[in-house]
Image 1 (tube, one colour):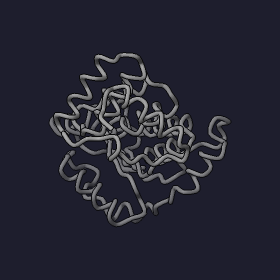
Image 2: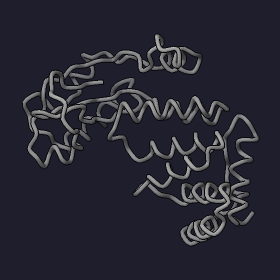
Image 3: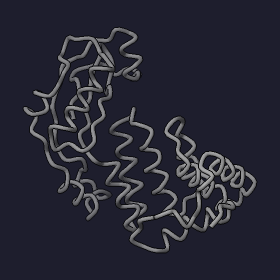
Image 4: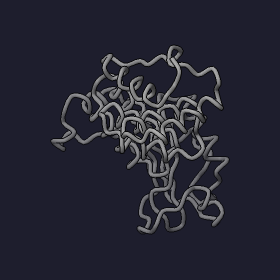
Length: 241
């Protein structure tokens, strides 16, 4: 990750708000340490050790060469988004999100990890609770994370049979909505016994995609029971086979 050092703790605006305020980027520090703390008993177990092992530590010098912004320059959302694209295409970094970590004269943070995707992978491999914790960790590290993190978290909650929390996660997706996400939302309502809302959501999915059928849905779970629980919710919601 890259962050500005020495900034006073204040409420952290978004990058868009920082740009509008004319904020200036502070000192940039590169840190490519492990994403999990194995000294923490809650994180010293196989999924977290594996995540650290899979996390390729990108050389700080490489990251610095790819930066399109410098200390002392004003925050620009366009420049930061282009920097993210360059880092993804020219390094071992799988996921990049440049977010502010503190605010004084303006600060920048780059999180270079595939943590949210790893959480999703754990969830579909039968480790739903571990997957939830991993996505939540990604959210804490990147408080201005993209919306798709909520989808990864919702899938983990649903796989853990924590339907109320899955529902709330799906409802946090404001823009990044597709028929498949809405179908999962309908399944959450159905599993909670809120059938009127489930059927209304299913009707919206079929309005957006009249060809939506359960027989066309492919779910990739290691445990067949986890896939079946998703189909069960959608059947309760009234989706056609």
